[in-house]
Structures are given as C-alpha cells and as structure tokens.
Amino acid sequence: MNLRRWLPAACGMACMGCGVGLISIYGFFVEPLARTFGVGVAAINAGPVALLLVPAFLGPLVGRLVDRVSIRRLVLVGVSCSMLSLCVSSIAPALWVAALGFLGFAVGLTLYGPVVINGLMVKTYPGQEARALAVAAMGISVASMILPPLVGMLLAWLDWRLALALLALGLLVCLWILVLAGIPAHTAAAQASGRGAMDGALMYRRAAFWLIGLCVALGLNASLVLGICYPPHFLNQGYTVAEAGWFMALTGLAGMTGKGVIAWLGDAGHHYARWVAAALLLLQTVGIQLLLAADSAVEVLPAMAVIGFGAGAFVPMHPYLNSRYFDAANIGQVSGAQMPLFLPFGLAGAPLAGYAYDQLGNYHLVLQCLGAALVVAAALAIALPGARGVPVAK
Image (cartoon, rainbow, N blue to C red; front, side):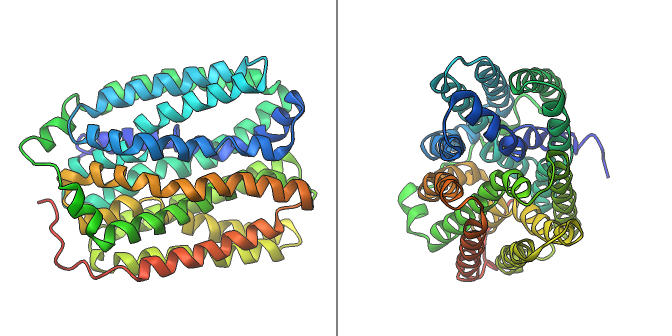
C-alpha cells in the first residue's frame, strides 16, 4: 500500500474523529450544564438538534461546494468555526450564549463533517470508495475509544468549562496541522472539473435517493440519540462516570472493528450493499435488547460490543450506498440534498429522549423505540433496487 496515497484518508479519519466523534462526549456535559444553568435534562438534550438542523439547511449548499471548490479551504474554515465556538460555550454566562456557541460548532462541523470528508474520499479514491470511506469513518471509533475516558477523567478533576476549553483549543491546533499536511489544496476542483452537475429533478425522481436518505437518517439519528443516552443510562444503573466512559470506549473499539471489516471487504461486495446495510442495522437492534436485559457489567460489555460493531460499520454506508447509485462527480450534491431528510427525526429524537428521562427517570422506553426505528431503517435498505448497472467512477 502506498502510504502517501492514503494520507488524505488518514486526514479524513482525524477530521471525522474530531468532528462527528465529539458527539460521543456530549452526554458527559448534560448534567453539569443542567446544574449550571438550572434547567432540565430535556432542555440540554435539545442541543444535538442543531447537529441535524444546521446540516439540513446548509447541506445542499455545502454539497455543491464540495463538487466545485477546494475541500481543504472548507475544512479549515469549518475547524476554526467549530472549535472557537466551543470556546465561547465554555465561558458562556447564560444558557442562550452557550446555545449560540453550540450552533456555531454545528455550522463549522457541517464544513468538515461527513458530506465534505466523504465527498473527498469518493473523489480521491475512485474504485476504492468502500475502503477509503471506512478508513475515514474509523476516526469516529478512535474518538469514541479515547475521548469518553479522557473527558470522564477531566471532569473528575476540572470544572466542565475548563475541560471543554482545553479540549477545543487542543483539537484546533492539531486539526490545522493535519489538514494542511494531508489534504491537497485542489483535490475537489480537479476531480469535479469538466463534469456537469446532476439535474436536480432527475435526482429527486429516483427511488434510491429517498430510500437511502430515509434509511440513513433513521440509522444515524438512532446512533446520535444512543450516544447521548449512554452516560445518564449507566449512571442511573449504578455505574460510575469512569465506568460509563470505559463502556463507551468499548463501543468505539467495536465500531472500529466493524469499519475495519468494511475496509477489508472493500468494494468486492458492492452488489450486496443494501443487504449489508440492513444487517448492520438489525445487529444494533439485537445489541439494544441485550443492553436492556443487562444486570451487570459483564452483561453490558457484549451488548455494547454488538451495538458498537453495527453502528460503526454503518457509518460509511451513507456515501457508500450513494456511490452505488449515483456518479462520483455528483456525490457531494446528492449527499447534501439528502440532509434535509435527517431533520424530522433529528428534531424529535433527542428532545423526546430527554423528556422521557425527565418523566420516567430512565431511558428504557427510549432504547426500545430506537430498536424499532432501526428495524424500519433496515426495511428501507432492503427495499432498494439492485445496483448492478450503476455507473461508478473509474
């Protein structure tokens, strides 16, 4: 393997881990924020809605930019916006200021999140999309293994404000160095030049567009809500914050294993992509049922491993499925146009989960509903037409 050729994929891994991967630690800040600002858990749980609301509106625009301008510039602007916004949240005197800071984080994340990084992978590695997408997505798993224990220890020693500020500034410096070293300045423009944008009306008339969008919206939103629920759920079950962090780290390790399997398989099984996606969604449902039935740490561990493997391997499925049904030159446009489909589930999921916790004192009903949502997502994946005649980049 040419290591230099895979440098952009490694950089994409870092961006995914220090972007989407940060969602894995959100749950650790829920109760400290609720105490600081004197609000309920439901109010703080509404924060991640911005992570779906902002991409839903900006996604189509960002998707077009991926096919037209330098991805390096997009990523650098996004990283700066996100991390500086988290610093603002760390010194916020009121909840509305913290909310504005988190909104800025969501805006920045859209510029270096999945639509942009996955677009870079598909354009940079034609014919090796699955492997490149899986490598980039491994960043989320690495973050899920490292960040929860790290943040758990920081919060045991420091105030949440100082812990958040140190984390944001450290990631800002690291990401700037990695992006400048790993992402070519003109990759996106060079790959997309001379290729016409896909006709919007044609894109929206294809059943695959809607089935993939809805399937991934349900699947990824379920993972988002699960990540928020984990820390309070484990604390409610009598485990410590540190133990909760290690449970989540196991999920990250299992998720990396799942992505590794996808990378190892590569694009050899692209004709069966819909079946692979459905199997991964159903596997998470099995893991949730095991978690609900767990009475001890010994029983929690396999449940988290099963959930983590399925969720981790499913992360690259959005761009991978799109690459089976749409041309690589328009992958950013297609993925961006699907982002509004995430909105209904994102608006309802996290706040309803927080409301259920406030009312019931636990997340048991929420976990059951998430399992049902994953079954519906699997059915949507199975309903996809065959992709044997799909044009792929050469």
